[in-house]
Image (cartoon, rainbow, N blue to C red):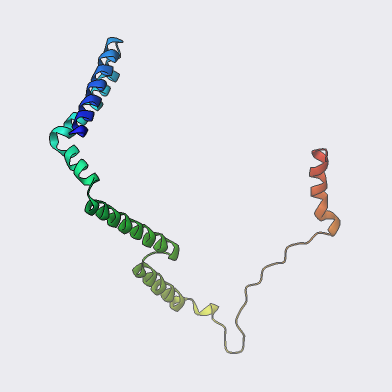
Length: 147
């Protein structure tokens, strides 16, 4: 009963604000305010407010909301773990199968012959500068900033 009264008062106040806004020749804003202020009365008339009031004081309903929240947390956690692992089990299995196919199709030229050991990919070593050269760039930056 009190919820219906509060909703009616809120709607009446909103409609009053809408009238004042329309008087100031802001008709679009006044229409929007009137639309928002009619929502509480509509909720009362459809019975949603009564249902919410009954639900708010029902321990069974709160237990149900708790279970819904728990299930949501479980869904979110499992999705996060799947993303971290790289997809679902089916996707990981398909990726392993694709990797095996690529290994089987690898050209015979890259395979080592009987007399050779496994080939190693060699990278050129980066050219190292002397110890004085390493700090010359830093010294130039510090001098530029007056340090």
